[in-house]
Amino acid sequence: MIANLYLSWYYDATMLKGISPVISPELLKILAEMGHGDEIVFSDAHFPGHTFNSTVVRADGLGVDTLLAGIIPLFELDAYATPVIMMEAVPGDTLDPSVEAKYRAALGYEGEIEREERYAFYERAKKAYAVVVTGETAKYGNIILKKGVTPVC
Image (cartoon, rainbow, N blue to C red):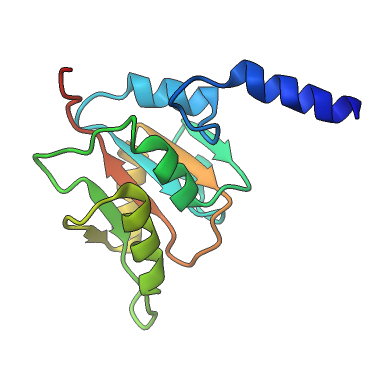
């Protein structure tokens, strides 16, 4: 009972209007700090985030699609370059098309998706602003988003 009251208080006290509860304060800060052209990796649970980047946020238990749906109302995708990048399959392996489909649906994105070879994807992750390691278990469940310019209201 006390634990339920605490959790209720915690979620009510940390919630902001219009911001998904799946976005941690740390992730929200990172999204706000990023400039146009900066990239952020949303990785599967097996991605070696700490190996490739010094800024790693944990989002254990959350699927990449859940986080993408939570951030896209706050995050402008780049309009001048391909803003969505995914890892291509290793030769001899295959991609599950449902992974791309669920990411597209979460983002509401119908544009081009750039595919990067595994080691090229790792190199790109080194240069990313941050890596968010999720609980995603889908094979090749890694995606990079390139931030665009937020329109003036």
